[in-house]
Length: 341
Image 1 (cartoon, one colour):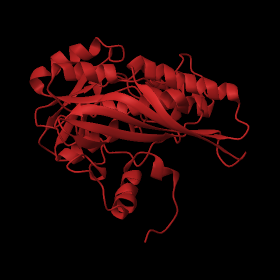
Image 2 (cartoon, rainbow, N blue to C red):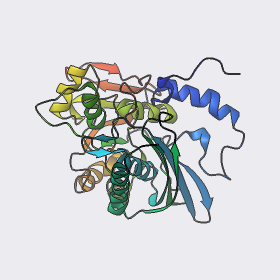
Image 3 (tube, rainbow, N blue to C red):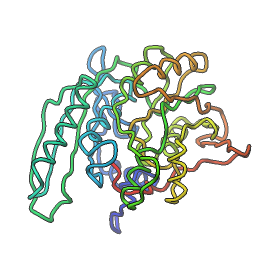
Image 4 (cartoon, rainbow, N blue to C red):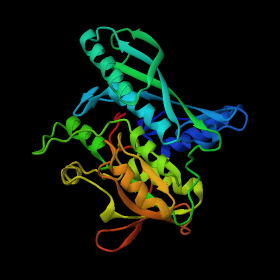
């Protein structure tokens, strides 16, 4: 029987949350997959239902971002883009979204409409339908403004799903854009700090990036580095595959403004949430071709090959630093800025 209380860290995407899911949630659920599809045990970005020659891919997420309107987006844009991205990095074509919106009594209708319009704009960009949902109102003071939960449905050919554990020795690791933008932008707003350059979230749907990469072929795995950032995403992939990911700090794209803001805020851009980036692991022979294809997309113009998969040390991520040293890039305990997604 579990003891103690739920902490903010338990929902922050780092090792503390992973431990809670494994020990408390998964261990108390008996049926965790359908047929031979992907299920709870894999703890991937989604699950699948095998159906003939295809797999129906399912994912869902809850969004409690604070503030609900932030530079570069809002909770509606974040919710739909995030769900599309979870499907995309599984190698599934996003088809449909369902949503559950819970608002506080007294929430302005004008703001609610703005959020719904943002949801629609993202869905339209990708060609995804919003097909069903639920709407509820809580008494004033019983919820913090609004919570949006979204579930996504996608489709992939059977046996072609991208899983975190699919890494192969020699694979190259591509990141599709600048890291740290979302988490640092929200942290600066929360702290009330204004910088000379305007910091904006990178929140965006990345199906165009994944579609371009899949069109070339040779993609073994992919992940969107949300809570816990690039560091958590890489560590999850290394741990599940039992291999090592070596990355070069000099090749990881981070905006100069984000670096400066990170230093002032005491944050590590490797550990903060990204909402419009894909980490794509591909065969060495096609890495440059995949990179070129990704760079031609709307959301992949600043893609870079940042490292490769090696044999040792197993389950770890090694960072080759700017000064030529090497160190382990450890997974964070949690997202350093709470309620960013």
